[in-house]
Length: 554
Image 1 (tube, rainbow, N blue to C red):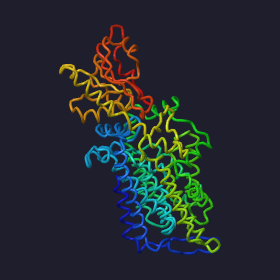
Image 2 (cartoon, one colour):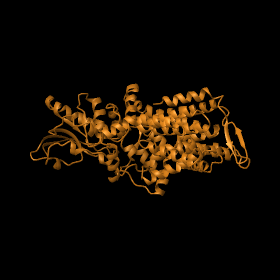
Image 3 (tube, helix red, strand yellow):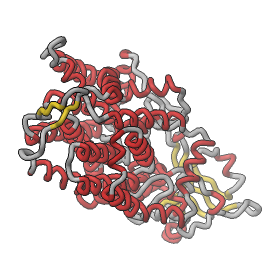
Image 4 (tube, one colour):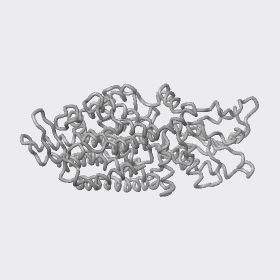
């Protein structure tokens, strides 16, 4: 999935000395100036920042593992999805499953190994941000500032630090924006529309939210003279290519009666995520992107809309505004906005560069001082993005610094935010499952079902449990894609189950109820303080084990 990035990076490098300079237009004249001394230098600088990003995540993953933080809940699910490869899933596209499977096959299933591709995607996003800044006319100081903004932004640090679909989003989005900018610079429309089509198609396979930025970019172009790019046969080629790539996923969704739409509907009516008003939504953007970067991306947005220091770029400013408004009206999660920021960082860095290079405001120290502040404050708030402190130390530190984590979902949290709490308690659950399974007779081991209420519990059984006891049967769960994978012949007569029900409630359904272990990790999410039970023989009169009625898309 990185081949398109590698291909056009090679093209950029091979033509570094021959491509035309950037053209700036004023009402009276046309001034031609080089956008950068050489593209080769821009590529080299971008590669250095990308390498820093990659090595940073490698080091931090090893450190957090040393502190006792385990796999994140969703990582179990993605790994199991990777072992059930398909063109679609209830709650995601297929790219993250392919990512998980490739990670396992290439590097293994250790905590470090499964996160390599997400870290690499983050590094590619940094690299592309540097190239985008160059393509918009920024010199080395602007490129460095824009890429540093990505390096210190808490949200990028967070999403690139574990296996997720979110780490790939900025890579696909920036590629699409870069392709449009390159075409407006006069480069091959056929080549760059193909790049855009491939990136957009893969982005849609990665996460459906890609459609919102594509719509916003299209509207931004339509509102400006740059709309001419949309009405060419090359544009048709790129759009057709995008649809061809995403078509298998659409057909899969149609075949299974659009489970993604059902999932999204249930999340909305069930108030899965907090609904934020305009001020709160804007406030989360400031905190998740690093408070001091507000002086980077807001000037970037203004520069794009004014289109003076960034000529012919108003379309991108319109696209950003439309995208913000669209997500706000849809009450989307605050981090859905994150992939648009590389473009705003690039524009803001260019605005800084040109403002402090002008005769009236010449100040060679302005950008280095700002970068220093970004680094220092970035280190101070790093614990809010990646768990670099032990849990007890994290609680004391954030209390002393008056730092508060944004809530990703409506569920009650404990002493740690959900992003960290969801890394605790899984080994305890898997150990209890294995111990209960080994206590059974060989006959019962063939008939027992391992049940988890949600995909995190089931995924931990399938991943951690299987590592300890290879003979474990596959876990079942009514949650999302686990429901689609079915009950594996389970009759409900013999279960090892993770449940929040009391023993008294279960004795109304089963003849024999045995408590295996209480899951009571103090740092886990409160709703995971459940019990592992061994349940035998459903009582007469109890409704039969009805898998179809248990479906839970949420």
